[in-house]
Image (tube, rainbow, N blue to C red; front, top):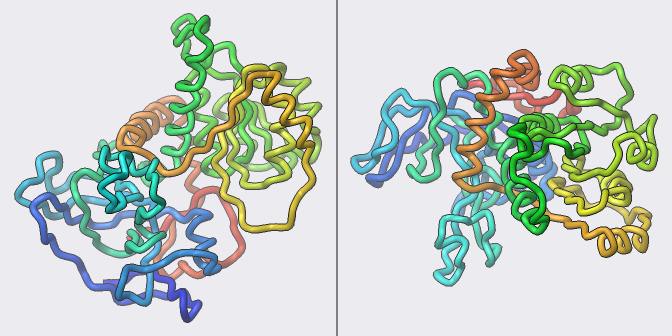
Length: 369
């Protein structure tokens, strides 16, 4: 069967003839791939900065954002039936028996750094016609979300990040969990850095949590990302037009920043204006670049004197995947056109090179199988 793979030693990207997998254990599920999303990680792997195939393979099949359909189940599978839609998770546990997170099913917090990841590190990904996966690493998808469920994996980043933020903010014991029944974020201000898929999905999540949301991104209006932000009820502000200080004056106390831009200069410039008791969620994994100047002393003073917290979010738990599917359903009810507009192109496998190494365009592009 066909797949898209990278050959790290040869520094090549091409369509490969990949062996069709079969079920070999009773808890496994065979899945027909429907769609695979293209993300920045895939594009970075295609620069050969990282990415490693399984032992014994000279290539790595790409793809970790996936929607598929069950075509066969193992004898012990209880959750799924043939015809069900599913999204797979990415990270798999390390083998160390002393790694508490991995032994507890929370390999997103792996303490040994010996985990493997589908389509990224030592495990083939989903950018191929079929794959086999173990039942615990699959999340069911309602049929009505078939058109948007490929975005579940990037949404899990926001799900996990906000879960961590709420855990941190339990320190504010005088705050109510759900203000006036309008969401835990009601009356609070959130700034989202970046208007890519992770940023806009994060903005949607923050809005349904009740936050007043500002999307702070590079391109001046008018542009289609700004249009989507404003369709969902966020305010779009260009960092080319409005400085971080002006942003803070306009917003008021910035209670939460959700960074989805992967750009050090912008990230730390906005960190400088995080509000009192604020939480800063970092998701970006920027490429190696020369140092950038930051107001380090000012940031340190604020973190200390304003009781701020900075957390990172990467990968996700089964609960985060379930929450992402649930919230995609809520997004589709509230903003059907906007959430569907995040997928700006559906392509065939022959377009893989343009999508993976050509100029980045649109918001979320997917390959259909």
